[in-house]
Length: 392
Image 1 (cartoon, rainbow, N blue to C red):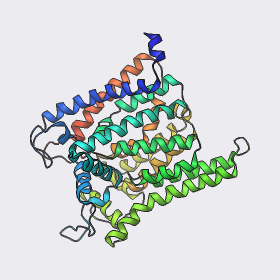
Image 2 (image 1 turned 180 degrees about the vertical axis):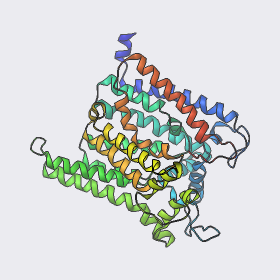
Image 3 (image 1 turned 30 degrees about the horizontal axis):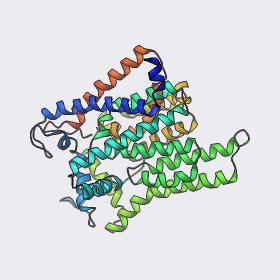
């Protein structure tokens, strides 16, 4: 058996892990779907594909069949209401193209698109981790990615798995220093889900780091030009959707106003101010001053300390640049609520640090814990109880 296992190609091992993980997650989703009451998106006990297309899946469906509004919808008191401009076009447009070719409906196509990109991400994630960690640890990193608490997102009508694929590809190209190939990759990634500005920051820090260390790690002029070009591509594409929304609607702040509409239920309507959202959130969720901000500062400090822990340092400076840059980006633009866990999903390369202990008991335990957390996340965030205020 050991000989056969060693002769098994790496990609087959990865796909086997992925298939087993999807069987587990699908079973969890089907159990919750069977007990799902009627809700704004489905009737009682919906089938799998309908259950996998609720919440923001409806927004992606609207975009797939009718595109984006040229006029922003307004609330009764004149503020910008929730609308499709909060969601980027690659995932719904790819789904629409497949719908046109196959004749299948969106609730079938969109989860399958996510599933395909999730499998491709698992393969690419192994290749990324294998450049940084031993082969066995890299494979267990894939196990943790496939069984992660938010891995149900890998097979529902959300853009997360597509974004994860392009992010993993971008990180692989960054680690292997294929800067010119990064240009188209970061452009597509940036209009799949928000995060292009975070990657631009990580790339910028990477360029500075290479300039500082060029004596021990040669940084040829061609590579410098290519890396700067990739950084500019990430920066411009990270701002592109804001510009597009402003041009189409005639409202320069269309995108940020739309995003703020989702925050209004907590703090009312206001202008976008960087980093204010988390301070407001800390005070909203922990109103006993000053404990909310204190806990926020403590959480950021712990994350910062973890970046310098030995397991995370083994992931290399480039992945650490990404982890730090993305957290800074989230702190700048997001308001913490039940979607926070999903918003933090692009930090999944850090799973490589959790994969490093080789004790069988540890590995079995963490997988079981992850499966239990999947169930918890589906119950709290995905399953709808009729008065739900915890969207995924």
